Image (cartoon, rainbow, N blue to C red; front, side, top):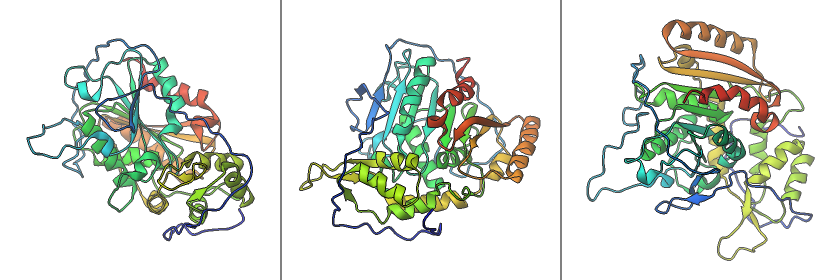
Length: 395
């Protein structure tokens, strides 16, 4: 890496005069492919049914009593809508977070029909820092094809993607990002059976369990992909460091004319081509009044993201893992070529938590995904699919 930056971020200061990059534009393919939209919800709220629909009867799992007290008494994982009186402000789900709902062929549920159609089993897929819901699009469609009774909720976390335009109060933290998702689930009246989070999203998933009212409505399986519950340790020399990447992106102009030149600039700065190509998926054609049709602008809010990443480094959720609530099963997945260092202490603590949870009715497991770097769902999607699949069987 050509330069080192502190993880204690200062506010981003973009260059306001657009820089005219030259070179060929890099065309990136959207991974979210949406076939239909709910008619009464904003355009960022999409339902994707990759396959022909049919009706499925979904069984309800029994309620379990848990040991943990709620830290957020008003947000419940049971997600029951208490009803809205006349004159009360109604918030649509897409005003909380932008999301896509990828549904299997046997799912007929929708937000506007939630009271008349049984709730299908739902999984939530959470992206990492500087990512977006579209990162999970291809993988979610594959899951929906293999498990047609399931639906998969993909969200843009605060300050990311289409959610960046939804104003959120600070602080921008792991906990606040988790609370956003809980509020969205409550508004949709959905109770997830599986929550999968990659990197930053993994800690968000753990924080969701930590904040959710207890007891949970049903058992939930949480997957934390290539993230530890505690201190974040960046990789060694030659690896990409997210803190440095965020700091460098703060120096780039808000508008650019070429994805290719942004990629080249990042590579020249010492970042890998894979990371550079991934970053420019956050560039979209600027449609604001007075903007040139050839201009591209960033779809994230970097000040907030810088704050979120610092929270990711500092947030410690070991207490939850070492005292996992009854009915919660936490799965950690380490990438073989992980961007972050997993210490012997981390692995030993998870092993001890496995034994403790087994004795107390919870569950903790450790998995290793071979032939994969930090971006597990891109590096080895087949291996990841095989490991995750058992969470969706038997329904």
